[in-house]
Amino acid sequence: MGAKAVLKSAELPPSTGDCLQFWYIAHGVDIGEITVYIHTDTNTKTRVWSLCNGHVTGWELGNATLISQNSHFHVR
Image (cartoon, rainbow, N blue to C red):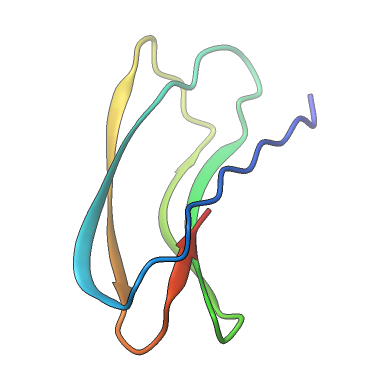
C-alpha cells in the first residue's frame, strides 16, 4: 500500500494530437489510480488519461491523446 511508480519518456517535440498506446494491468485490492500526464517545458502538467480504483483481470490497452502545441514535453 502506498507504493508509487513513475515512468518518464524522453523529451518529445510539440504535438497536435499524437496517440500514446500502452498496456496496463490493475489486479488486486486497493489499486488506487493509474494516471498519465504530459509535463511541458513551461512546467505545465496535464492529465491525459486516468483509471481510478480500477480492477481488471488481465492486461488492457490504454490510449491517450497527446496535445502540446507550443512546447516540448515528457510523458509520465
